[in-house]
Length: 423
Figure 1 (spheres, helix red, strand yellow):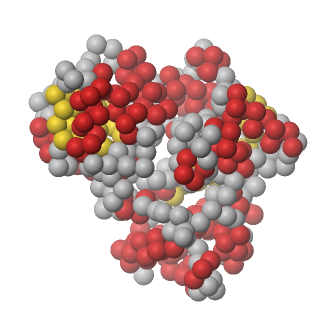
Figure 2 (spheres, helix red, strand yellow):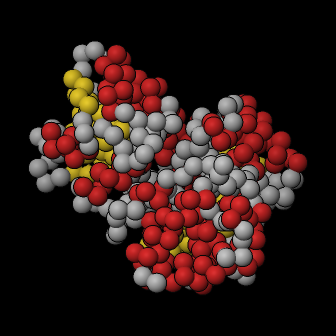
Figure 3 (cartoon, one colour):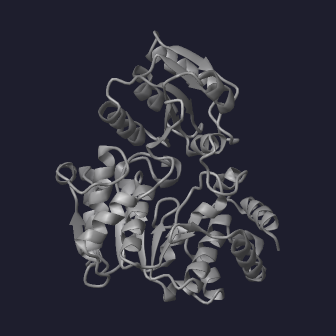
């Protein structure tokens, strides 16, 4: 099997939708020899900041000399971004080989319980990290936590970044219900670290931790505001993520020791594309990219803009998925710009650019708002602007990174982020 064939096979698995439950991934992992039993994990859940926190943990432990696996989703450009060892993307040859090796196992499942793409990739990643002899795997949930395929592992620590509204159709329509899904990664006796402060959500996490006799460490925003260690990612919300990552490292010190110097070096070197990522072109133009795809993320981006880029008024290029709270997100961003381009996202779930534009116009009647055909058109129309903000869907960020020549190896694979619940 070659890489292109492996990618096409993964596309074919989208037919099976998304499944919320652990029985199938547990069966598939057992058929694969339970590779998770050979590995140590930090399991990370939450609404926003999961990826950034994972990137910080990975960088810290790599700075300490460990061989670190990193499993995240979605990917921005190349599917290989999802599976990395010491921040090296899995090779095309290894991905193709692992897909070929897992195919015979899939034939043992009847169609009604056939593993989904995410379940297959979860076990495929476990196989890869085990054969790569990773000392530690930073393991991000896909959706929720309790019934997410990643929850078949028993971690050394569980990390919950925050709880906000997102994916309500799957996770519940209250913060308490969403917290119940995220808290599902808490395992008996395993420590849990969180920055959740919303009382309704925190009460759920406290209850689940107590029921599991799991030590709970709570990191407050006030504590993080006094955070002095330098993290390379922009924004006060990243200080909170950094404080959370360090708290997890402290909890695991007896098992996996890390020196203060290694912690500092790891945070200073962390790299996480598409999250307040600043690209400065040779002509002096600044382009800021951030996948603020829900209300909480939009508020964090706006706060970062007002602090880190004070006095600069960006041209905004915005696109969103239709199943997100895009009217509220548009209203948060509308006052920040005098010129706004709305564009469709390369997804069948895209919000209509004209509908986005209408919300922006209503919220900021003085702004020039243009509904474009695509992001390339918007970038071309903005080529002489000093400061551009590209935000909204991570799909849009991936497309922008590819067009700007700042993408990881590979491409044309963003469609593998598409999913729908199994009927």
